[in-house]
Length: 262
Image 1 (cartoon, one colour):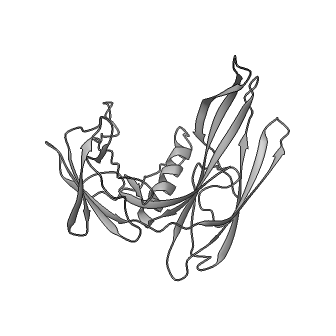
Image 2: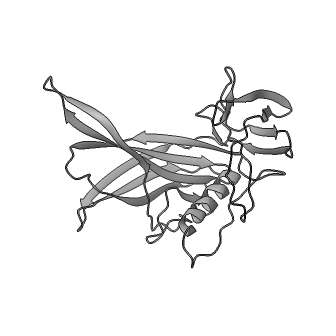
């Protein structure tokens, strides 16, 4: 569960397997899932066929608070974890520019500027989700739009702050921390490639996501991205994805996000 002050609680509970086990990773549908705010029970979650969600109206996580999760299920060890929900850090300036590449690709550069809070350790992430819509003439002389594709883009950055995405090592979520920029107004540039679908008339909506992570969410996201980059590469070093679950595996981590569509 990566919980946020912009959304409701949602938890996935599944069983783990040995690396030598060819069995199926199945969700557990009879677990007891409880969220605590300090020592107070905040909510219990119910299974909706895929994830565990609140049964009734439950307020979203609050920035600055630490939450604890407890999960139990028949024939399994009980597991627990806790993490803080960080505050949202807004982007102050967003600027984009595009050029056409030699293979017909569009190379887009994005510059973002934000103010890092002074005197605290902060962790960040950058991601872009793109949605493609086909524009189709209709019988009334107008146009209809149909969503054709949604995906997370591979991002590149040469900024030395970025710790997981160089020119030859793109990442769907760029991560960094503020140890070199504490309290400073900071500008970061990154880029991505897109290709037009041939034979279609379309428009594209991009959603830029600027994450503020807890330390656990930052380490999990960074290690998971490293795992994705190494997956299937016989020459890559094995990657251990961070877990902060006591008696189990997984992540219970706080994050917040500032979003901008263009």
